[in-house]
Length: 393
Image (tube, rainbow, N blue to C red):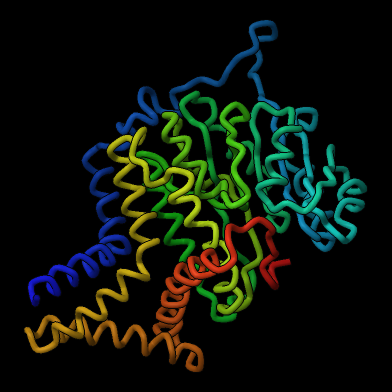
């Protein structure tokens, strides 16, 4: 019996350590020994070696038409600024189509978007963000489809940077870099996101990113996948396109900003809503099916996604087995102390806002959001409608 407890402890604590600490180190080592780009997603010349397409008649560089899609639900406070931000991008106006897809907005979102100069404003029945994006993609006329949240602000040159990798026909999806502005109110999402972006940069160099972000990304129109309402472009496109041998890359010079959720409670609520549809993506959309992945991409997906999603269960198993192993060596006393300190720091972080306690609280609550999302999915069924994160507009 004790042997089983030992096995359970190491098969829970080991993956937890690896996904958060060992995986970034493994990515760095794999890139250091020269495995980047050998997974089948991006073989051949580097992007810098691929010349831009040239018009044979004018001998000038061909610039693709881009449709920039902004899904919006009751965004009257930010939609004017967002449309104007899109129209001020350093991109030929005749080759930029700005589409606002209103998901059953009950405020003045549609009216304001039209007045602000959007090329196409879709007045759709309430169906959820994915339904709005699917409808916009169907109407779009661009060769590339770019997507942005209504509260995201792009730098003037962001679109040019975002679409540059599409010169390579083996690239299907590109996400940019989003940074967060405003007081954190105890929410360490900005700090976590900087860590996450560095990991994605290494993934991009190796076999492709395993997730994107909603603030700034683009996909080939020919590769667009109409997802179910419970899906997510951020999580679904990278692995689905990998099965089609299309790379999903991270472009850090394509920059956008968003307002930070001003409290950790608000961040937990936002992540909990995001996690409701996670299980449909992992199981229903085929993320778990290894067919079509290259070995390196499968390694990335398992290490960065699946182990993270299993972390609530892994933490619970590690805690319970560690209790059973107390008295069987100093090491298990140390690991028990570390787990108790993590939980105590998370509790104290609510009242004592020093950095170690804030980190512990953020980590515990974000991990908890995965379990709460599964609980909500079981009670309420798959998600469809979407809500804005409080305080980000």
